[in-house]
Length: 587
Image 1 (cartoon, one colour):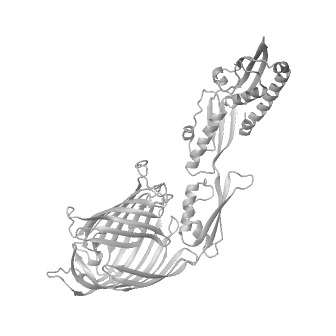
Image 2 (tube, rainbow, N blue to C red):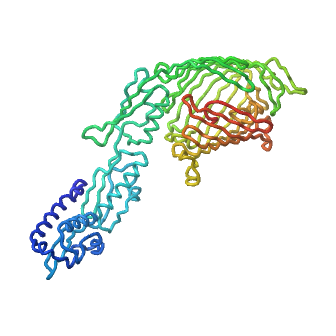
Image 3 (cartoon, rainbow, N blue to C red):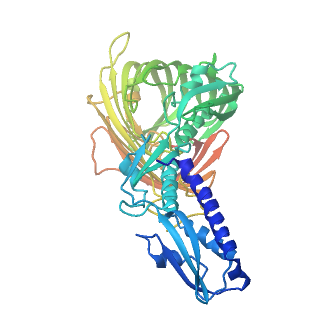
């Protein structure tokens, strides 16, 4: 049985023996060289499966040439490097008036089987698809080395960059290949003084015993960086001595301040100029909790505070509590897209929620309890024959909302990929002062599909449609209804504005039922700039008429900035065009 090191060293040993034998033969026939005898014949012996013509095709020595020691040695090495032979020699003989050269070869065995051990990521059948060496053929070192290179490349393309072929042994015609798939022994985190180690560790799903995958780890490293707690995150690898089957991951972080004061300035066509301050700490007590308090002043004035722990998994609950007080002076009220009057609104809200992922972490749930106290007043600038189905609906509303989410997005992709589906049930209850009793239910699906493969080779812009920044189709479909004949005004489904129907004023269409479709083609035109073409369609009404819909279309621009994704949308609706500025994607 031959090991890989023996196979690799075989070439050197055989070449040394062949060279020594050739030198002795040539020295013994020095008289031939002295007389510059010509070569009269070149032959091969010892071959059974490899034809003499194939072997001699690589030899430089030909009949009629002058005998040369250097050329013989070169041909011995060239024939050996064909890969089919375990031994190559040359015999020189007197043939009357010239010299005969015979290359003697010893063929490798015929392949009777190829067996893999140590492979758990890919099956033997999957690995054999990369092997071109066939059973029943003469084993060829060069061909099989290429087979092993393709196997290793298969692992590397899948992200398993540390996997390698650790040993090859040959016994008769059987080839035994050992695959080494290094596993994570430990994840060592250092450099954190404020942030608790478990807060960082829970973002790294790789754990002891997992096979190291660089694609997965790069994504998890990005999640650690995306927490916003650190100026820098570095990683190093340590392979323990005498233990090549394991690797330690060493994560070194450099923390930064997570508390900040922000100045808010905004302008809306309906709300006018507004501004305020916000104090935020995204890593309170170093436990990954978030605290925020702030205010905005203007026609729409808001004061709020929230305290939350956003992270969730199968073992960890996410939760949030908060309160908000909002006043909105001279707000426009629309009915089916037509402005009816202006009014003032005051809303006080408090809420608390908790959620967690299921054992299958693609699924999660979240329950939110909310209390809203709403007051409408001061109707003014009403149109002739206006309809007021608003002010009769103020009061206290107590709700319990359950959200179920199925998230099938690829968590290791650097862009949204896959789909998300969620369903919501909102029950209003007459307890603790609640004045309403109804059930709302709605569902939503979001889909993200890369079009790179479909358009591969047809179009590209400066190579920006890469696997990490592809041409992307995104779609969102929403539909909802309720058990009430008429919902309170503040609980109605509403469409219009920068996050639903972009070609219309906010809350242009309201009702107990609604449907909405948003479709976007996101086209990268630079590493940090994306052009978006979009189409929106939907309606909200008390009695749904599917043939009565409203739609818009337009273009947008997304620019990656240190503060988030800057968003600009220009939409053309049925009666007017509207432009929006904001941060983040619509969905």
